[in-house]
Amino acid sequence: MTADDNFHFSGVPEPHRIRTLQILKQHPEVKTLMGKNPFTSLAIIGLVGAMVGLSYWVKDSAWWVMLLLAYGVGAFLNHSLFVMIHECSHYLLFRNKALNNIFSIIANLPHVIPSAISFKRYHIKHHSFQGVHELDADLPDHWEARLIGNSFAGKALWLLLFPFFQVSRTFRLKEIKPIDGWIITNWLVQIAFNVAIWVYFGPGALLFMLASFFFSIGLHPLGARWIQEHYLTLDKDQETYSYYGPLNTVAFNVGFHNEHHDFPSVPWNRLPRLKKQAPAFYDSLLSHTSWTRLFFRFLFDKNISLFSRTVRQERGKVKLTDESKPDLDLVEAQR
Image 1 (cartoon, rainbow, N blue to C red):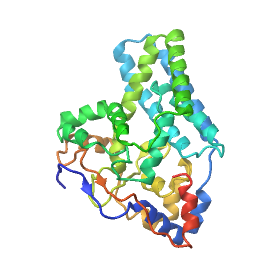
Image 2 (tube, rainbow, N blue to C red):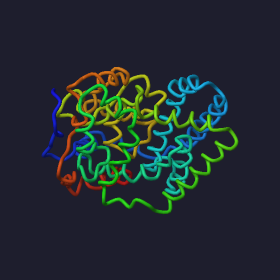
Image 3 (spheres, one colour):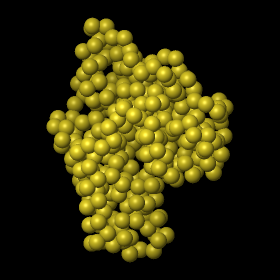
Image 4 (cartoon, rainbow, N blue to C red):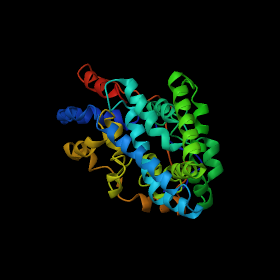
């Protein structure tokens, strides 16, 4: 595989709906895995509490101690909170959508930057229109890919500043309403939380949270998660990859990405069971076993660039038979 100066074009629909129908036909029992996991709300409370407590403990530490703890501990806690926001975006905690939004906003607090509700809007589009450039904010912009290139320095800078690049992509998605009541609520609650941390704990605590946020999705082995999911690192004909390494235990199984895209209505704790119930489908796919190894490969391998992604022009629709439509509709309800 060599680095290209353009994205890989696919003339076929995205693979997940097709595989979903095939799995439902051969393994109808997987439908029992769909549902809610309200106990995820307890994980959110625990993770937010841990970040708040750690920020208070480290608030007066030397800057290098603060950064070391942010890289080695805070990044993992904050990354887990990203996974919690992801669960809320698919309404996998409660049947009540408002409760999912509320817990998403709570999970967002240690990230300092309000993004939970906006993430939901863009993420659902990513599921529905994977690879469609004007609808999928997970795809880099053309200018972004050309700017970064395939050098170590460029890709390291991209990972370090990943949140800024991610925000810049949203401007090309014209079909999404940028502001509504929930987004305003997200901003107001986040600003109030940031002010409270600054006033009662001090600026050091807020700086620790902010550093943990940038490390959790950027220049850190955890940042390889964003590469693992859809970058063509193993085979240009496979556009989604799962990760089955040990960090899934502290990342709430977010590595099971093919499984999640196929069945977004299955909560995080049941994704390994989904893989076990349909082994012929998932064991035959290429996957990653180490985020750390992928992290360094992405940085140093000049054959991998931001152009190592699949794009398509059609909007991902699959022709459904009358028999298969009800099953897929069940899955699509939370895609």
